[in-house]
Length: 145
Image (cartoon, rainbow, N blue to C red; front, side, top):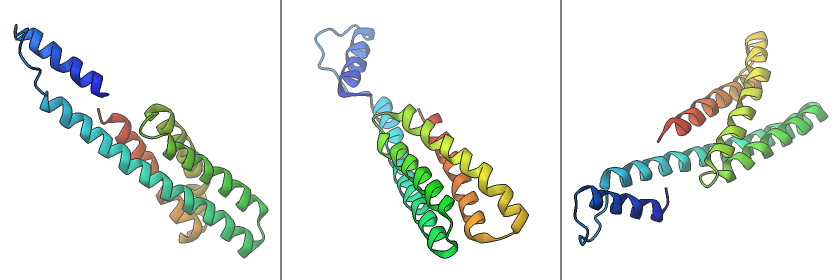
C-alpha cells in the first residue's frame, strides 16, 4: 500500500461519514496492517539473504572438501536465486516469494530424502531444515495481509 492508497482510504472514510470539508484522518488499523506486512517481508528478506549466502558457502565448501563440481554449481545457482528472491522483496512481493518458495521446495526435495537415508546432519540435515523454514516463512509472508 502506498501513501496514495492511504490517502484514498482517508478520503473514502471522510466521504462515508459525510464530512466533505473534514481534514482526512489516518486509518490506524489500515496503517498497522500495512506496517505489520512490511515487517514480515523485511524478516523474510533477511532470512532469504542469509539462506542464500549459506547455500553458496555450502556449495563452495562441498567443492573444496569433496571436489564436487556439482556442489559448487548447484549451491551457487540455488544461493543466487535465493538472493534474487530476497532482493525482490518487498517491492515485488509475489515474484520474490515465488522464487524463494520454489528454490526452497527444490532444496527440500534434494536434501530431506538424503538426510533420512544417511542420517548426517551436515549438510543434508541443515539444508533440509533451512529449506523447510524457508517454505514456512514464505507462506507466512504471503498470507500476511
